[in-house]
Length: 117
Image (cartoon, rainbow, N blue to C red; front, side):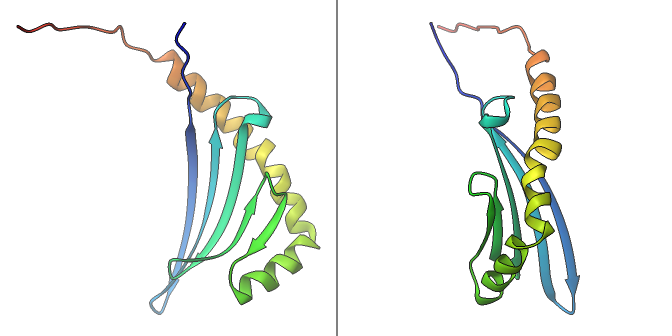
């Protein structure tokens, strides 16, 4: 019996630029099932291509990678921001994962084989 592993990702990117500097945030959902425990939600901030802070649902808090990111992580982990991010796995990912999985799995094509000698 053959088994297979599905892994999908959902991405949402917000971009802001001013005077040549680029800041953007990325929301992503990686999943291998439609169940909540099979979903990983990640939210990251970048400044000029450098990731400076990330929230991962498996960690449950913000982690900073730069001096500014560490300061923001400390502040956001002690405020309402972390509570909102923890809820995103269920409110943002779970809803969209079910839609995307159903859409992908219900649109199958009959396989064909061509043999050449």
